[in-house]
Amino acid sequence: MVLVVALLSALVLIGQSPASQLAVAVTQPSPSPSESPTAQPWDLDADIGAVMVFSWRGSVDWSVVRPLLVNDQIGGVLLFTPNFGGNTADLKSWSDKLQALASSTCLGHPILVMLDEEGGEVANVKASFAPPWPSVMAAGGPERVRELERVNGAGLRAAGVGLNLAPVADVRTNPRDGIIGARSFGANPSLVAPLVGAAVQGLHDGGVGATVKHFPGLGGAAGDPHVAIPTDPESETQWEAVQMPAFQAGIAAGADAVMVTSVYVPGLGGGSMPAMFSAPVVGKLRTQLGFEGVIVTDSLSMGGIGARWPLPEAAVMALAAGNDMLLLGNGDPNYEADAVSAVRGAVLSGRLDRTKLHESAMRVNALRDRWGGRYTPCRPALIA
Image (tube, rainbow, N blue to C red; front, side):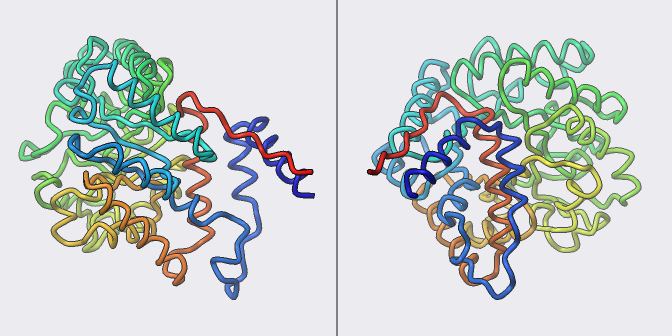
């Protein structure tokens, strides 16, 4: 019997598409309220690890990082220039090392290697394939944007990157904005929206996943969430006319992920919570925009967030609000491991819904299977 189950599991991993794996996962019956989280047939540690994205400072040794990635079954790694020096060869070495780790330790899916490669100065790989600032790309129209992002995507794919944290969909309408600037395609929603869609298509053409950000939009707010959480006082009607169209276009073009950021949007039902911790705001992606992919947080270690919530608590709050994948972003992998422990405790106590966590993990795993790097699934052991 054990052999049969093992072989069937292998066939599922090898023979089904990510979409069909997701369909199977989310149609499993929900547990009754009386059931303990530990009574589920799913692997709790694997589900928690899947939704976590680790980062570490360039000075942190691999001997520190490796056991945490393995023990916590971490699904994603976000690399920055200090990790690999900004050159493609060293980035490829890191990507290969991470996929070799996933294969050798029998992780169920490849590790999703992620990067910020928006264009202009926001380019962690300092290579010829990096596009110019989005504000510069915009002058060439949608076809030019798509071609530049195709080249960018192909370069990233060759270096082992699976998911680019781009394009930026923010429509910049506030001159006191302190973070978006030239990262935006412009100030006119009717011009920005098709450029965002073209950027998503171009990254797919090149072979990498695309993340539309920073939902619900930073371009209309003064300030910088890396310093303090800004407030956008726009009404829902204003938001629907200005910021929403670009996110709609990115989703329609097939965006794999949408990043929710740290901004107060009381007009959208966010109240006194930043968007990424607000279930009504995060929920708009599912209910109003029809997005079925991965909802990912902006860094949970940005200055504005860290000043109010320690990372372990922020991780629990982000999942409770409806996010699927967490950019921990602290740089200290041991502290990031504390966030993993906090989420486990929140599930076991009933604070976090076990079934919703599993559904998030299945979305993330489908993304890992689609865009992850070279990975060799472990063969099931043959038991006589």
